[in-house]
Length: 362
Image 1 (cartoon, rainbow, N blue to C red):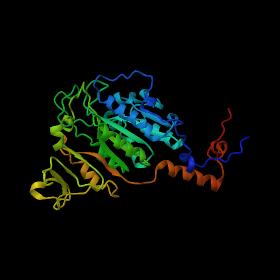
Image 2: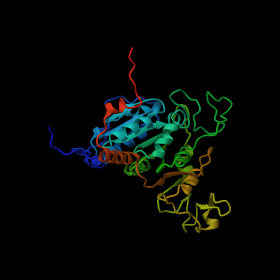
Image 3: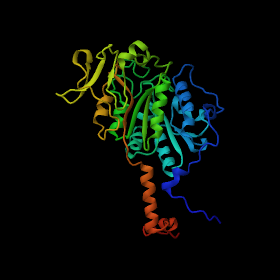
């Protein structure tokens, strides 16, 4: 009979075993053949994640990847960790159960714009509003890739695909706006081909206690090639990408030697909305300083709406919001601990045979 004291749910995370040796990206590569289309952006994301995992300092047995359905959802096969290729759209629900039952695990969800925002929409927003301790990587290629090129919930209006031969009539979801509306405590966007930026965002997401949604613009070179070219081409990107840094002025474009070139983001005093100005013409006064830790999501939401859905110009990347909020897992563990202290351990048999049950005698 063990004489060890029971582990409190509050201290479970402190007892996570760390790796007994220095790990590298190779330690997180499984023996499975990677089977995405050659040139797919998923390869770049996989390499970045495998390269980042050693920074967690956790044993592989304490890391789990849960996915739904789609090209991105093959991810768990290629990670030498625990994982589950689960049900269409239900990865956040399955991961919620795992994260709340096993608080010693680092739980990651890998999903796509179709999987997460169509059949999985409700599961995603409820995981975010509850602030379950999950890291959700949403691969957005603005198309259905696995089912061969139909329009998705993030496809731009007018998109011509196999399922919309005359152009899509749908208004697309903006994943960041959706997450902020669901009260997500951590919201970020990055790009598959920018490994340094992607790794930096993953690092911040991993450090966040609670739900962290990271939208990753990912190129599908078979069915939607070049969808994010404006953000990747060096000449175009300078005018199209707004790189957000906490505590720094929100500016982009090519600055002049006097620092007054390029563009800046200000608040329109007439409407309260955000707008882009020419710094050379209007100066730097009024240019917003990015505050990812602002308690209110108002400015983060406005930033998420800046990008033009067709040209992608004025697209912010980086961490839009990162605020502390009690994680659902911790609140539930505290509640269970209080229940045990007040009422003692539960009696499952008594619960099943309570006053509202009866026996049928035949």
